Image 1 (cartoon, rainbow, N blue to C red):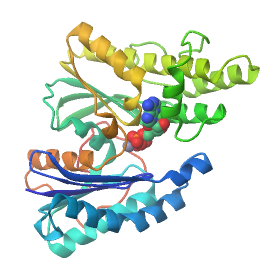
Image 2 (image 1 turned 90 degrees about the horizontal axis):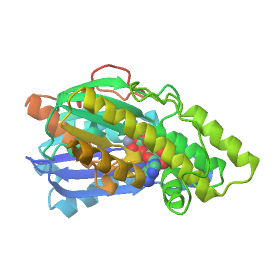
Image 3 (image 1 turned 135 degrees about the horizontal axis):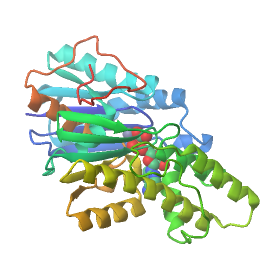
Length: 335
Ligand code: KG4
Ligand code: ZN
């Protein structure tokens, strides 16, 4: 079986052709660099660029994989959550082509897709999963790929958003997570004592807005280097993410911990999870760095997971985009 997956939820246009087991035959990601100059993603520019880039990317990925639209068996696209204009480009294209060719179409939840980057790995359940991206900070309890329950989220900013806003504040570029991560390698993580809001590890909830304000006040006081502030900020955020996830893993008797989303590219977060999971003999699943951020491979694997649970799973023509996700259970198929 061949599957074509499309992801356009924010500022990356991504396409992939996967085989039956989630193996990647070809994939492409086109990242919109223009937003850096605006200090954040401009939704109208993002959707226009998806429209310009997507047809060529699809042509190229089919060529690279040695397939054609006619040989594709199933098509899948991200339906949400994300920016409506951006989502509409990928979802409408994929839906239209699937229906024109008379092939099944699946509208995929972007959050579930991030977790499904690990779908082809030997995950042993029960698992606790941390999804940390520019828009979300979520902890889940999973007893299987089709049973994923939300344990807690952030009350304000997402972890990636906190990285991005703090980077902007100290005059670094956008997106700032990677830049802070790189600068932090040359700084002293104990240089600045930042607060750990909602620091009780038993609470699977986060709050990063106060931390960002504390970083701003330290920066405005003027006697700290970018490197030291980056290192202290990174240490505080990673400390919160790791301690809360590991506490839930212990409490729920998890045999695996899954980490996904853009912030899972963070080098300190990765090394701390490695250390903590190793201590407790828990299997850790970290995505390769290029699959931490948005990509279409994860969308394709989420579609395969939905099809494994129900081989006749598909979305109808009324499957629409959605900007936000609020529910207790997370499923790969969104509509
Ligand atoms: O998953 P993603 O590509 O898009 C969303 O669905 O939001 O995540 C993007 C986020 C941005 O906030 C970016 O700053 C953050 O991931 N990020 C990082 C790193 N690389 C990307 N944050 C911390 N450290 C990194 N190395
Ligand atoms: Zn994402």
